[in-house]
Amino acid sequence: MAKNFKRPDGRKNNEHRPIKAKVGIIPNADGSAMFSTGDTIAIAAVYGPRQMHPQHKQDPEKGVLRCTYTMNSFSVSDRIRPGPSRRSMEIGKITQWALEPAVMLEKFPSTVVDVHINIIQADAGTRCAGINAASMALAHAGIPMKGLISSISVGKLDKNVVVDLSKEEEDFEEGEGATDIPISMTSDKELTHIQLDGKIDKKQLKEAIKLAEEACEEIKKIQTKALKESLGNEESVDEDKDKDKNKEKSE
Image (cartoon, rainbow, N blue to C red; front, side, top):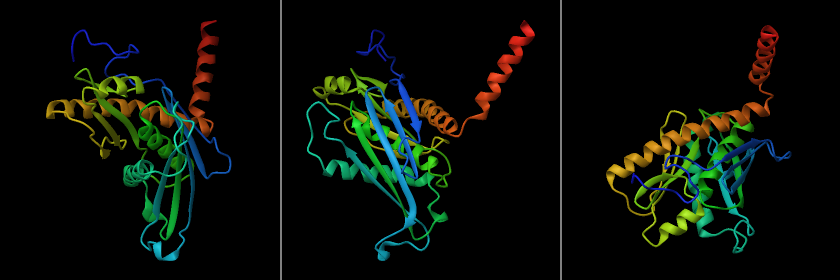
């Protein structure tokens, strides 16, 4: 990285935007979650497992994970046409592939689990935010999983590899050949999804994956914390009790 390199918002090359996460935001869904990074906000709702219709699409050996991705027409400053597009269908399929390695579909054969992702505000990194929200929503729904899936986008800015590009940074880089690398991985850092839009050499690609691993570790902690809080995390209660005891001793 160049010595004098500085990002527009002052972040370091390995620093993601502020993240917020919460589960249980849609009461009539079996599981739901919100994940935001910077000004990008994704909401995911899970329904199922339930019997797959039509029957000829059922798999007697395992369940089916079905993901839909939608950017609301008001999610960007220039309103987009509502309804499915080629891009949204592609991202829905990518989301499915990213999540499937963690979901124990063999536990519920002949059924389907539907995951609906809505981007209500977009400022880059929407597919990764959607995957993070969907992973949390699946866990919140009680779907058997081997672990959470965490996702982050890595890109190049002024020839420097950086984590979590904002829309401003993406627009700046477009004239010089933008490079965007969305990456998803398991808790054990096994890749479940990687895309490359643009050009990058082997050395920088290795750097990008390493930065993604570090960022996904932080994201996983935030996802886990949100899920624990939804259950009334007993650990935080115990910590408060310990603090009170220490305070009494000091007094």
